[in-house]
Image 1 (cartoon, rainbow, N blue to C red):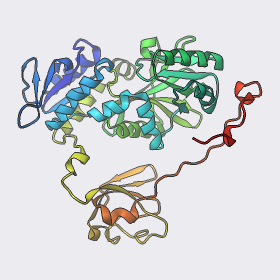
Image 2 (cartoon, rainbow, N blue to C red):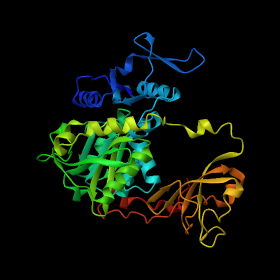
Image 3 (cartoon, rainbow, N blue to C red):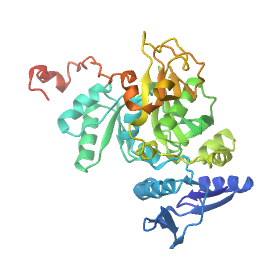
Length: 407
């Protein structure tokens, strides 16, 4: 395999370890400065130049894109995708994970546990948002922060309001997030490669510091993950569109709460804590996947008039319920079942002998018109109870807005 590691830090621990692991396995590897690429769209096919010369052929790339060059870095990765060069982390996946708000929006849509979060812009909405996530203390996060930078714990409502107002005045976007007291300054970093967690560590903040990042002085220890945490970590990475990721989770009272999915996770902390060859696991996975470049299904299906991919729901009492896939008649209707999801279990390429049960969800490719009556109804928002302010809260002095003008 000929591998390119896209990195501006060839002497960093992570880059050196990945390069060494590739060489140890007999692969050809080069570290290429992401900013020295030129995307060539002048010819008949997508191409790239590097340092002013046409780029040679590569089997795979491993993006290590820093936050400061996210836009250009994603453009380079996207061009490699168009050239059918394998990448474990797609440009879309990097974009999803790099924007904290976008990541949380995607994860919450798929039922992944996250700390209660609000995103507002108007000053009048700040106080209600703080109450909606449980009140003070509250965590305030910059959307673009990394390594714990831009994460603030506001001990009371007045401090929280002042911090948010100051950041908004500087045109900064912030998240207002519930403080998970039971985590006690600890979190878990699970390193996901492909469809498994290859290593996990618990990070603990030092002293009065509530951020457990290693860059903030946090300590690390190896941890054996509970299956529920492992499942959530893998699901979170895959939902983001990442095959190599660091998933940070808090240990909430009701189970794992995902804080962040990192598309360029560092190796030093996790390898030191676990004494495992994480770099080798990454290289081995890429080598096993080089013949399967990531495909954008939407691009490939534009020529298939009337065909597409849809998720179908097996309803209670429906004609196909209780029948096997073969007996369901789906194939006769030009519908092919790609995966079957039952609860939290995903069954890829299910056998035609598998019986369909109520609430199974089928990811299918076929004639859109034939799938129309099986597509689940659009999800409706569930009404939530109103947050009642404390007696001495300024909100309690405001009139009930339910009878005022609507939005």
